[in-house]
Image (cartoon, rainbow over the protein chains, first blue to last red):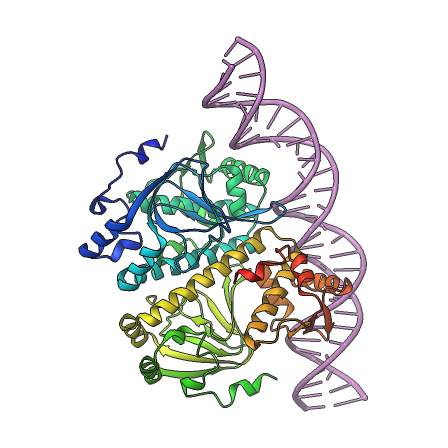
Length: 248
Length: 248
DNA sequence: AGCAAGCCTTGATTCAGATCAATCCTCCCC
DNA sequence: GGGGAGGATTGATCTGAATCAAGGCTTGCT
């Protein structure tokens, strides 16, 4: 379904869909050219693992298209998702030898990669890259902290509403869809993945989605296609300030 | 009790207790001198608020001594702590006008502050600062993600054990105490603050601490003074790999 | 067509942690 | 020494989500 995303990749940075949102966003033309020298694309199929926690990680990179998840697992198998990687998000940590988390492709995935050493060298020479990476990391930290509130203090229903609002918002930002009008998108996650994100069981996720549907907060077509008739209503259910979106 | 920390502050960066761990860690002598020009110290008493979420924030800074908490609050009063600020930790986000969270001094607190604008200017001129800040932010992001696992998937007992192990570890790192031998420290948080950190109620915190004490995992003297006879036992109770500490 | 594998839903029951409530301890102030 | 406030403990009860269990719906394979 999402297969076409993996075709005709813009090999040329100038036409890259994430050109102005990824680590390279601030780069000048000549800097881009240097990055162009050391970049390479990798494709992953839905379900494939990009990185195993603890394994040596010799590259870093950006998600170009598709979606991946970042998860942590305890010895007894309990897992918690700690990040959702959408196009333009950065994978890997400069200055670290091994991967800290499992990264798994949820849909077919295209990544723009750099071998770690050349990238780090380039980062040291190019403040624009380091600056952008700092900015992105700070944003991720904010997102992680927001998520801590969700995990620690929200009810199951609020958790689901929060997740839907986040996915909806990020999706809208990506498509630059005209504001107003009902929000429509496909859930990129299975019920189980949502449960892992929210610290719930998949049964509870299913029940709460059914409940939100029954109450008219969301409209479901099939199991994945979601329409949000009233986004503020959803934010309300999430326990968020209805105007929280303006801060970003 | 911790009052003496606020006396004789090293006005000279060379003698600063957090010199080699804070944002300034990588700075050369001449860079330090520039920072010295624009820095100023601020003292806060235990319980005082450093920053209100949403308020304008015209400074950034490092915790020199004492402890502060970073918390998020929902309209109905539910609160979640999203960060614990120990000496050398950085407060504030360059490039943002308003504070995103409440920052509250838990003990008497000394901060080394910079007005935001001069600091940002300096950051743009001084890669050593930006580099160090990136590194610290990445560490914080890792910590936040670890905490997401705690919040989302651990039981109350595991949560308490996790918190104790984190506090113990950070305390040991600070005092550079000789490895081996039982770990001893004072809890810097009330039961309520621990509950806010862990997404629990204070009653549950109290019960689980009592249980860990009864089971000999910890020894309590008074309500705050903790001895950990066997740190690996504690890690075990936390559900962590007993050798997780080596990664850092 | 027939069957198996994934994914999802729904129901019944259980249980960990929340909530409600009482009491205790320690420190401080008068 | 008495009273009060803030923090902590402990007990009784309730409840939201987990767990256990049974089907249902798609999709793809043989």
